[in-house]
Length: 122
Length: 369
Image (cartoon, rainbow over all chains, first blue to last red; front, side, top):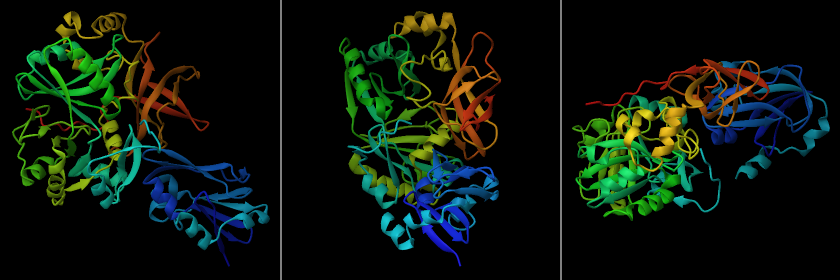
């Protein structure tokens, strides 16, 4: 059973066991506008919470997506290389960014749930 | 682009109309501007190339220069010959400083024998008015900033859409202008590389005219984000990025805008410095750049050669929705060797190759006479 969390930086995390899938929220993709490039990390790379993990580029500007928790990258969404617009059309589905192996489950406690995130974006 | 961020931003006269159209706003040159509409920057860009994009560019300033010596004053302020400009003809030119740096790039149209309209960039408008007024003080003429709404309607369907809205400007060719009604001013020009028009009108008449244009299914609002990607694909300079008071027309590759005889004998402000710049040759040149791969290379990124030595800088960079790849413009050193045909940039630790690419990236489709 997967649990979904959110960050104040407008990322979502879907946690199944010790595997975390990370993406940006629909609100975030709307703010960014049409994406034209997504720079994905290498599989195996270890991130600490707060590290810049992915760069999403809109027509106008580049923005960082931060690692929401500590962990090692286990896969990346290769489909975004040829079709970055998947993040716009399906931010919480086909537009996922990467998966990672959760190394510190206690970090999940500080994250928002759906209701908390909705309250944040108003 | 010079984002000003939050703070006290000026509002466009039709601000409420853009709010109703659900525009996303951002600060530019002191103005709260529509950046994108719900269509989104990619579709807005493509819509302009395929049909007709409507831009509210009322942040730009119309400045009227009129009087018996208006042409003489403009000949002093700008490197062109206003006396030689035919009635109804427009000219792309500059306000140069004493060092021949580009204080602004403007379009000047002769609307009457002794009356000209200058269209200036928003960020430079106040300085331009002050500068032109100071120049005009030595001549028999007056400088009047005009309060107008200024629309651009750009794209292959622009002419027909204007005619349907009751403004037939089909007789104009590229870089011609008229005053179709009292207080109105229109030119066949633009900032997208497409055929199109810029139409200024008194503020109280603008809402109704916008509604008429938007009633046409070929016309859609287009924001500042797509205006920037369109002009970059078209190889057109953004003042403040690609040309600045520290850039002269020689290195900017804009000498086509200054007639040969004037380069030699002109007495405009900056003429001597321009002659010196011509005889010395440019130490750097503005070029188009095509980054390899899909990652845009943004303005301010240094350009390096294969050995890692800095040889220039990107001044505009983004993604070209019509060409389907990243596009950029920048300056590349011309000394000691010829301009490079390829350069590199470091983007987040990765070395990206950029090919020097002819401008424009997308062919201009102006309606020439």
